[in-house]
Length: 74
Image 1 (cartoon, rainbow, N blue to C red):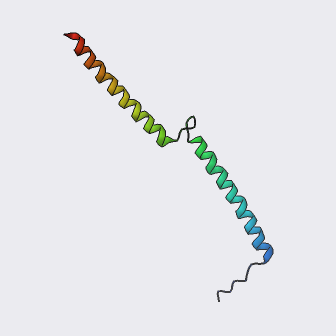
Image 2: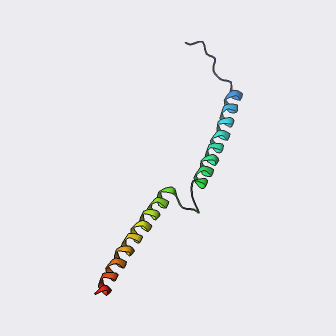
């Protein structure tokens, strides 16, 4: 209909082989990117949550310190 000839079997095999190699490279690149995006094995989302928890802990400790000072100030 469009004047295109069907691919020969050898051409199809060459395309499949190169796409398989490209898939493997993409998978390896993705794995490397995920490894480099982690800090000491911690995902960025978890690192953010760790920091938020630490900030909350410091605020609670500061409030407890202020209350303890008020208790002993009398």
